Image (cartoon, rainbow over all chains, first blue to last red; front, side, top):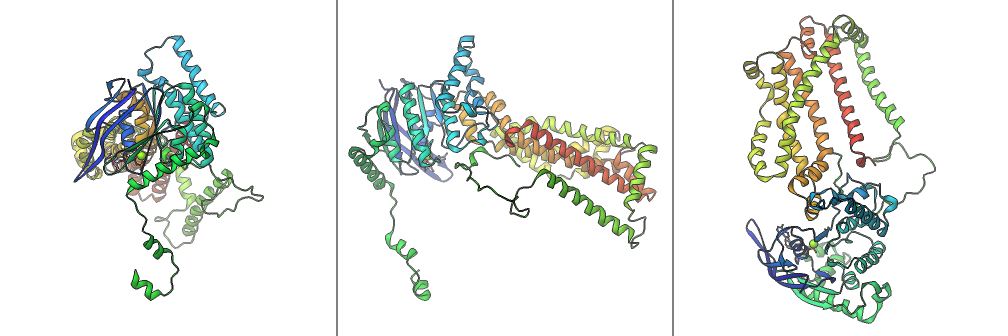
Length: 287
Length: 283
Ligand SMILES: Nc1ncnc2c1ncn2[C@@H]1O[C@H](COP(=O)(O)OP(=O)(O)OP(=O)(O)O)[C@@H](O)[C@H]1O
Ligand SMILES: [Mg+2]
């Protein structure tokens, strides 16, 4: 039985006069301990799909379920890491990570043992993420990469079964990204959770995921799904990005995205814009 | 508002500056300044105003009745303090401002929080508040005297009318500006509605609410003077009015300066509390 199951999902946004088909006939099954990446042109509904899985929004029609139980709102078995920084600036790094312990939903078991366990987990997560030395810093004192580590640690604190991430590294530079990739793979191998990961970066998607789902816009739909022919998470390393099967898969996916994106570069227009001006008059006429 | 939404922060670490061998130029665009220098410039600003005043008053171009000299004002200030019970005037005025302001805060805080959080409450109260904001508080004075009488209640009521509606709107704006990402993060962690309000929205908006209160406090002083000018027999505003009857311009000056000074102290107090309570904004 799949961990996460989406059947005939569709989402329509009605904003005033405009009706927008953000998602149409989405069918996707994700198994336990699987890492699925969603890629696709901007506006194809990746974030919307992830938010629906997270319970922050719902399908207009269709079903989405975890362990065969329909998703109606956010649940403790799912955690989300957002595109932008959703950390609480008034809390220190350690307090941000422990934030969920302040909530009633996580205080069902208030025994000493559970509390010790939580403290231990918070420490372990900080250590894993390389955050111990800044545990008392405030988020606005940190770099973008550090902040996103805190956000991931906060999401992992309640040991969620499913981790949903929306372009978590979208704002980071290439080097920081690579470090974060290793971290995520390490985490994935250790925590054995199920991950759905939205990204623009095809290389990132292939390097991290077991399966890459390519989505297409207008209306938002699943275009194709690729299995990644790489070893499991714990055994991947950076050199594999140069392997021929990696590169050919990357090329194939990029071509699919380009074909579905419906954005064409008008070479003639570009030429016009960049050519040196010969004659001001002539230029004026031709434009 | 000096509350930086976390989401707006640039993600790249700040570029490392080359070490500056000599102190940074004073006139750099948005340049930095040492604390000492800052204080020096502020004192200089006050001195400049004082110097201009002194110059004009001593020039002999103006009648002393219209423009008293600084030293006359200081002298009057002293006699007011020792002979005329200045402290009683000051304390009754502060008491009224605090009364009206606090009553406004007690109602405006929960109401603003609800307006900024729940759409139905916003739709219900928002337009009414927007309308009430434009009602001239000063014009309420005769009405208030009719309704409440001329004792303490009327001054407090005028200050309340003058500050409350603005305060509600400003607080609801502050609450409304809490980034959705912060709220949704709490939702995905299973926070209840009450928890989202108390542990996220209120915490996130508090620094800007505090700033809004600081600004409205300034208006409260304005309305205090209005109330005391027309309907009081004590307080700083009343003292100024009485001084006018006796053509004691120096006392009018002293009263005005004193109100300005108290306002400045209050403002600085607010800022100090802001720095103490919200250290992450200054870290
Ligand atoms: N709350 C909303 N109301 C109206 N339209 C929306 C809303 N949220 C998303 N949309 C629209 O739905 C479509 C899909 O948006 P979505 O954010 O899911 O795309 P995306 O694939 O995540 O894009 P990107 O890669 O740029 O993040 C877009 O056309 C967007 O304008
Ligand atoms: Mg998106």
